[in-house]
Length: 250
Ligand SMILES: [Zn+2]
Image (cartoon, rainbow, N blue to C red; front, top):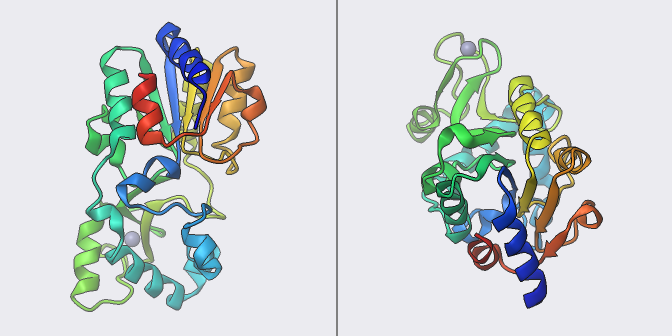
C-alpha cells in the first residue's frame, strides 16, 4: 500500500494545480471487467497468439484473422461495462474546473459513460464503438456491423464499397490520427500537472507525451500497479488500486 505521506503529497499537488491533464490506460478499466493486454491476467499474457489480431497487416491479409476478430468483438465485455470509481474521479475533477484534457489509450468510451465531457477526452487509439472502412473511410456505429455478424456474416464488408471493415481503433502497424495526436501534444505541453492512471507507459507515442509534459515544466504523478519508464520523472508514484487512489486524490 502507498504511504500516507505519498498520498498527501499527491493530493496537495492535485489541489495546487490549475491545468491538469490525465493520461489513462487499460489499468483504469480492469475494475470495470475489461482485461488489459500485458498485465498478469492480460489478453496477450494468457494468449500470445491474440496479439496478431491487433496487427493491421495480419488483419488486412487474413480472412481468418478478421473472422476471429469479429467473434471477439461480438462477445467483448466493453458493450456491457460500467465505469468505476476511477473514471468517476475524473468527472469530479472536471467539476472543479481544473481538468483540461483526458488523454486516453483506452477504446472503451468509459470516460464518456462516466460523464466526462466528450470534448475533453482525447482517444489516442480510437474507439471500438465505431467501425471504419479501410478503403473508403466510411464510419458507422459498431452495433450495425455486430448485428450483421450475429445474423451470420463472418466478415461483414463495407456497405458502401465492399471494402474491409475494422473497428475504428489504432492497430499495431497503423499510424495514429495526426489531428488527435496534435491535440494530445498541445494538451501535454500546456498542463501544469500530468496525472497518469493505469498506463504502463510502454506504448509510444502515448508514453512520450509524459516526457513532453515534464520537459515543458509540468509535474507528473504516476498511479500504476507496476513500474513505468517515467517513474523517475514523477514527483509522486502511487501503486495502490486506482478505484481507491484516484478518488482520494481529487
Ligand atoms: Zn468502404
